[in-house]
Image (tube, rainbow, N blue to C red; front, side, top):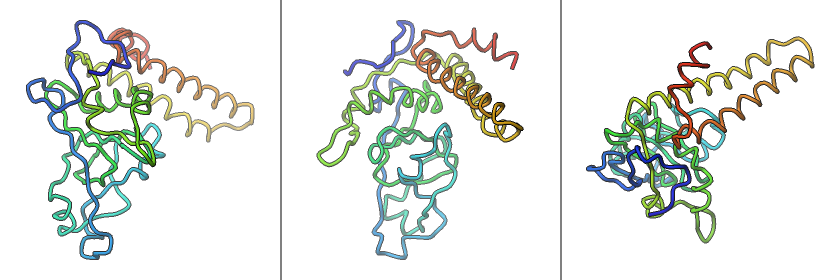
Length: 237
């Protein structure tokens, strides 16, 4: 079992990222496929088909609801005939490594993703934030002769610790609040009337991003009480 990148509170449930119905965290991990690009009957239908390059510049955005290319029913059958259900956690395993999104609509992916279906003890959004916080680990374990790549076998050894569902929900709420505050930066920048005010807004946004990035691993490692933050600062915003 690989050492965890984040601290593991003793009271939290511990397991790995390997599919394990009994543990109740990860039920299934799949990868996608690409139909023959020379077969016109496979393409330009109404079934979304996602590639890693589409989420490279997603930034803080978590949910994806459209794709550049689509498959027909024949194309879907060619790649296994099964759509990923809404809320699947999609992790890019190559080109690039470690980008994390979730699908807001049923879709399929190419082979550049590992797709995680969560069990009853793990909120998919929590897993998505947890994977983002563990990006340094993902970069470290990625390997390949031509370019870095994540392999399921490496990830299956990685230990994850999660609190109970109510605590997961509180952590998600705090992270979402921080994301909302940082997302306000851009529209607020458009409302200023002087270079000095613009610089001040940009500095404020930079500080908020820094706060978010420092708080994220503390929350997911149990070193910061989400209930305390939620009932304090975020209750007044």
